Length: 234
Image (cartoon, rainbow, N blue to C red; front, side, top):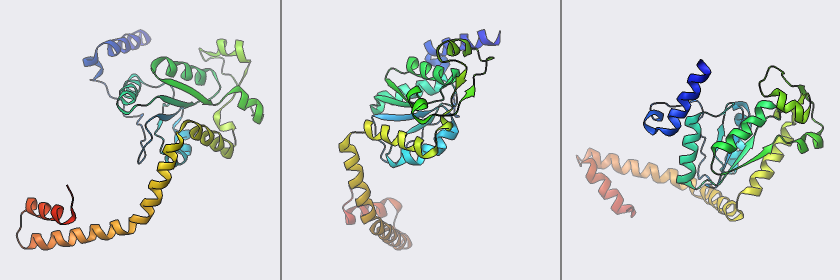
């Protein structure tokens, strides 16, 4: 009964936007770094993977999202709207090589109207790094189909050594980020380091001048107008 009700509610939310707007999923936020790249996002099956890989993704200015298992309808709706608005063309996906992990891959590809590329965990990576396996949970409703194709063994992303996982993800990020964007980021970061000390001093000076004008009884609007005119701010 609960399964049927959940399925019916999902279909109602899909086809009736007014119904969908009454639901909100705050548990799967997109993490958008400073000056984000628009073309790609990094999606992960688990929050623990996002926590581990977020610093690397931020270094390349790539947004990250933890699906926390099977993504919710709200999460996919927001992702589709974001893709249209920001021009996202591709999702790089990381999930376990087990019945649920491969199903997450399938569902994500079905729900998203853009390219979804699974960058880990793959059978090639499992063989290359000779990763330790775990037994498939036969109670999983997806186990029969998985076992028929891959046998009784399954593999978790965490079986990869941390440095190896970082290397794989960094390689895929660099492969999917336009070279001109990386060059622009490098220049922006260099300029930021140069100007940061000056920015701090300018902010202090603006506040000092604003305090003096405020003490003279000048209105907030006039203070703002004078400072804009003095520093050539439009």
